[in-house]
View 1: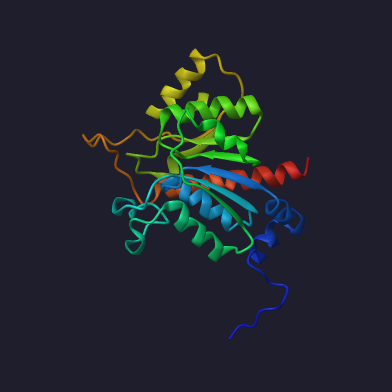
View 2 (view 1 turned 90 degrees about the vertical axis):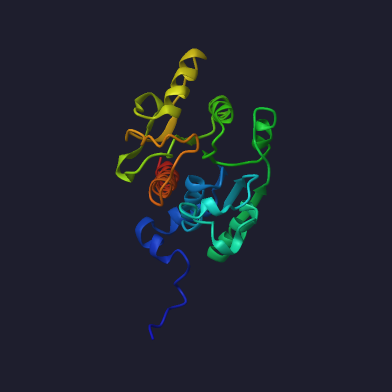
Length: 237
């Protein structure tokens, strides 16, 4: 049996790449994730496994059978459980030192401002509500809070087409198209980073979008990687 030394810990392999000082930086960071579904779930997973010190999870939904094909938290054994509750248990099983704050609420324009009662260093918008996405853009830019917004991953099949970019550079993304028009009409200024796919959406003929086991997860992992790298790079400035 392979013996371990007392110096090894949960994030030993990550520390080998980024160093002890950067790992300490991550332990001191707080990230709010709005939406704990296909994309948001893998953001949470990657940040928890990267030693982020505080995760604020915002979602009112319960785990459903139709989530199983793409959401990391969804299992046949926990159908009906609140997503924020299931994630709290999972995160604590990964890193007992991570502080988890659960916000079991549906966020809309009326209560959006309550998110900013919490203190955090980064916001991830992985929600499905267009009006909430618009509000997040406005509030984060106004408050100078770093954020990234996930665009549409439904009806997409090829994860290699995913990329993080400025909203103005997106293409073949119906949700991004609406937000580009909104930003232009409202004359909103500032950097708006989004996760978007350049793939032309598959036409299913159904109002409910189809989804896969690889596009939403890949999107979430890209966002998690982006945030961790941002934190580390800003430490060096």
